[in-house]
Length: 278
Image (cartoon, rainbow, N blue to C red; front, top):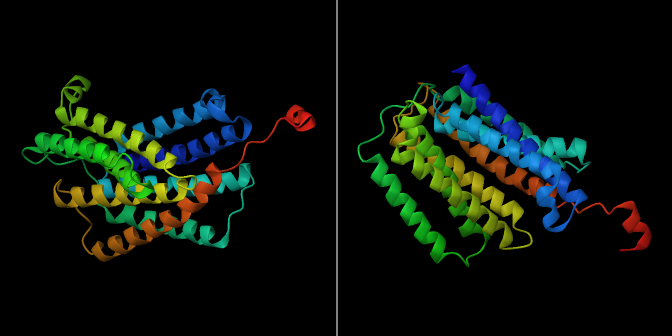
């Protein structure tokens, strides 16, 4: 449905703007104080709102379409950061913006819209086992480097998306009573915690962590959606969709490096600090 696709696009825009707002807050305040800066709080609110919109979009669009559109949030981040924070946009990033825009458009057309079909038998126990296995890996790899922790974060967010798509429609009470809904919430917590740990694993973690995150967030839900949840591609669009997915992933990797430059913008010292040298 066109409305659901627009919701996914709106979610991507909000997520992209959230990153810029948080980077702008980091320019003004250093240390833990940034967490209560109005711009940072606004960024968190926009990120959460974008995530909620994506969950709604998944009720009528395939996981492949929604997750690829959300990867387009990197376009918003780097372009708005260029306009607002004056962060340079090098030629490779410009090409990646154009390539990712085209790939998102192709994937959006290639995916067959429609509500999710019935979840496979035993979906809830399988989701619970997958969650348990992911938690075990999180413990075993808690001291690992950037890539393993970012991959686990991607698996967490991918699990949230898959559960959101697979949960049966119904009233809010019925949805909250579904084990899949609770598994999805737990996967989301795993994704948030592990991505934070991935960013802390290295001073230069932002680019590789973001790249691994989006690669997993696109590939895993797409595979599960097409293989297990009955999602389909439009006849004749199979090759175009696979090529567009590959282009989208490659572009996301390039843009993740530029997004890392946004996050790494140093704080701007206040005028009083500049005069006193403190």
